Image (cartoon, rainbow, N blue to C red; front, side):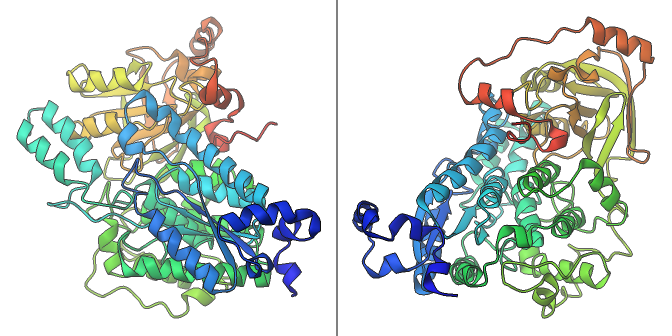
Length: 559
């Protein structure tokens, strides 16, 4: 392969007399004559001081840049935005969270597409920037890979961000004092890195590694560690190899690869958000993936990781015993994974895993397949007259497998949280939070504040919650999200009333409003769509273009 072939995109920007103005501007940012002959590597950094998840990524980007240069490329760092779910949770600002995924995807496509980058390394560290980056890489379909920013260390007493949210509920219940709450608040987040359990960030990092789009073990490294530095340095070299072999995301992100990612997510007990994001990523790659695929795949894959939020351990502890690579090797040997899938190493998944050692004998974080936490998937897709197009529940078995109760309806997350904290919510309530879907909120907020308050008040076994919004990876309990059609689109959830009987059965995968078809139809006929909450700006544009949660909540499906 000659030099021009390695520079398929940048050569258009910098070659020839007519591109002298382009070269002149690039000289001002550090290019010399030799650099114009090298492949240009766009390095998309999500560094920001708005969240600890990403506060260190500027340094990681510099490591990738140096490694790309040393490998014969020319690195160019640019930034995409990020926001913090943990900071905006429970507020109006959280409506921008899922929207940011689309903005980030647009940014990668816009910058690297405009500037003629021959390859891209994307570095992410928080929930939405990770799938957003992957969607941007997919759209451009140039040699690319993803680097995970790494996980945070736990706070004193094995605390993390969820500890703080649940402490708010405990404080409302009178279980802890003002001083105790302040102590947890002050110490639970000790430094850089993504939230420490198998929440959405660590889930998506693991899924992306299983997909083949990051280097082995990238998902299982502390944010501040020599291992993460080496991951960055190796990525700079790896992306040059991808250019030379002309390996693109479309070669890696196949249907089989997505199924591998789903299987690993299930085994780890990952976030419900993975369903939404994997559907979106598959759409962007033109891979046919549907909500029902999660049900089909989930019947054969056990949940074996005892990780928070429902389990005992944090990601930092999984890292110490080897990360997810030994689990993937175990799954491969059991015939659960497709080892023929290509990865960003230029080798197959099976080749990457061939030298991986087993977990230590004395570990109890990852169980044997013969003794799982749950014999099949914890990600349960429910359907029924309350969710005709599907809903997604996170049922580990610890919450029970069924729940019957009566509806207590809230038209916003804020009102529900108030009802939990002030004692309005009682045992056997099925909390219904609606008009929080992709179009209705808009933005499909995460219900971490209500679910954490339920746990903190000791109601985890006595109350269920359903919503057309979604949940944080840190949410646990008997919770059902992604109810579709959403209330704003006239889904049945829009006409539920206080006191209506609701049943949820995770064994038969049913969610049922226990009313006659005639009664539901009458209510739907009488229902009136509320006015849009926003008339201008990004939220209005998002609401006008976003697809259903069952379709990944993407914004370009029906253009």
